Image (cartoon, one colour):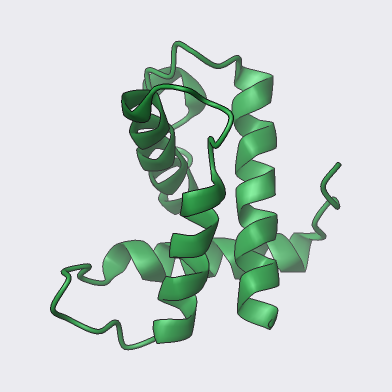
Length: 106
């Protein structure tokens, strides 16, 4: 079971994900905030390990980034995640944010 994040911790994790999504992610460039990029990328790698299909994992990762950057425009029902329930998606998002926060604090 993942630890429930406080409001401040959640905002810090969301801030890191938003900063990650605003930066260019090409193989030959280095992110200005390298620690944040690595934290979000490592958290993205652990998301959906139990899902068998690679396409579903990619879809989930993209949906998490979109939902974390702008949850009003990208709520669950707009993300077309038909292989997960809404509750499961938000549990996975909370775990993702917890992983981002723990990786940035190390």
